[in-house]
Length: 341
Ligand SMILES: NC(=O)c1ccc[n+]([C@@H]2O[C@H](COP(=O)([O-])OP(=O)(O)OC[C@H]3O[C@@H](n4cnc5c(N)ncnc54)[C@H](OP(=O)(O)O)[C@@H]3O)[C@@H](O)[C@H]2O)c1
Image 1 (tube, rainbow, N blue to C red):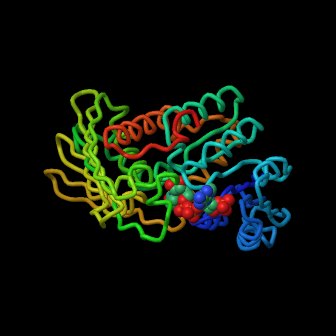
Image 2 (cartoon, helix red, strand yellow):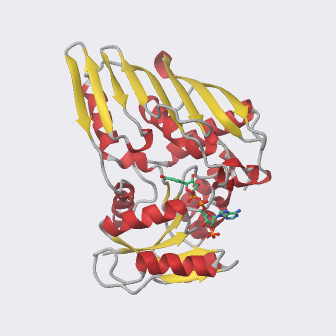
């Protein structure tokens, strides 16, 4: 069985994920929706034009839908089994909700939405419709993350007491989605999922959240630093930036040693485990890292799941709650869409 994917928002990340789909097992590009018919057609031709793109058997060339009703037509397409929403963040909620209401499973780029209320709404809809919903926190499925969790579970570094993680780069000034409030700009929404996601994965939902941001002239956060406390007196110190190239790694600190994740944090390429006995390096560099996420979705769908066991609703709700606190405490400009939508 090869699942037919309907991509919504054929932009930068959609191209990467389509390339990963071509090397994943169990899926192929079935259709593309864009506000712009030409962009949809070009994407469909590039990634699904030959009709056998995934190597998973015969299927027709990908369909392209453009214009204001493009998502409706994509959802009505019988070749679409699962939807991937890859629009800019404030435009995740609407097509994701449409997919869920149509009973079509959906993978949504991170952050799932730009408010806790909108994330809760998608989770409630997924539950009510018994339809699969997952946030595209692809880092969780990478071999490097599994190796990290294995080292922690082995007890090699003792009890984890703290996580320090950061991710930052100089965002191009001519890319509006990083700078425009209406497009969910700022470092927290764009990069927060990675350091916060790591802390949530290792330490669980925070008990306390303190966040400070510096704002850019457009009202989004250029830099944000979050400190959280977790059960058992554990802490996380997390930072994001769209102004500078940060170390973009992480330290996991335990009572018997530490683990360092080298840059880039999001694809967990290399772990260095340091204990009294010395240093061990685990190399987990991968190409097309997003295909681990796609393979995971295919497995979930084949098993009839409506929630991922790795990136579940509790994770997405906790992440949304932390990002919302960062927005509130950091004085980051709010989107009109944020409440309820
Ligand atoms: N998982 C990862 O590794 C990763 C990496 C980068 C980004 N992301 C996430 O992926 C999402 C898209 O990022 P991107 O860099 O791919 O963005 P992008 O290329 O700037 O835009 C993606 C799509 O969003 C829609 N869009 C852009 N501007 C819009 C506007 N003003 N109003 C309505 N729709 C608009 C467009 O869809 P149409 O074609 O319909 O116009 C566009 O094709 C973001 O949520 C981001 O956080 C994830």
